[in-house]
Amino acid sequence: MMNSDKSLGLGLIVLGIAGIWQTMQIDVFTFSEDPGPKLFPILGFSVLVFCGAGILLFHKRKQIKDGEAKLDLTQQIRGLTISGLLIAYSLGLWLFGYYLTTPILTFAFYYVIAGSSRRVWWRGVVYSAAVTAGVHLLFSQFLNTLLPSGILF
Image 1 (tube, rainbow, N blue to C red):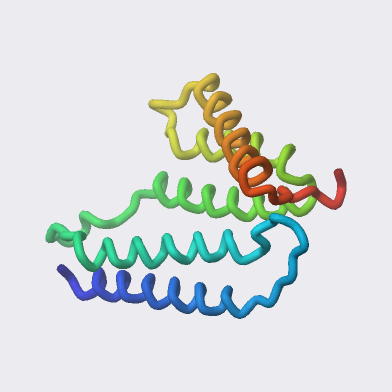
Image 2 (cartoon, rainbow, N blue to C red; image 1 turned 90 degrees about the horizontal axis):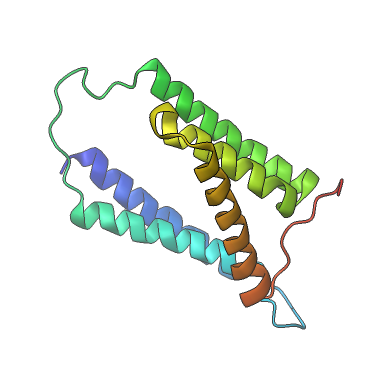
């Protein structure tokens, strides 16, 4: 294993543990069955710890020749587009709320990730509807939390 892989794995573990520790410092009083604002960050940081441990324990990196690891322009544009969509999703949740933003941007994520050779419009619509409904069921129904409502709607 290369040193960069070890550094990445350790970095993810340290970041995850630090995030969980910071989240546990949040002082919240809820008078309902709402799990409060601690649940989602703890889950997210736990995923970081899990992925970091996975990299340390199981990842084997192949030796690559010079020039093989470079991303071409199409891959760079795709990565920047996904980053832009994440920013747009954050802003969309704030402005328009979950129920308007999530289906539209989930379809946009599918459109970018699937690539031109595997992209089918109806599959994107099905994925978008399934993700929107699944997250709604998990958070709104099972965990009894409120999904973001936008400031405009």
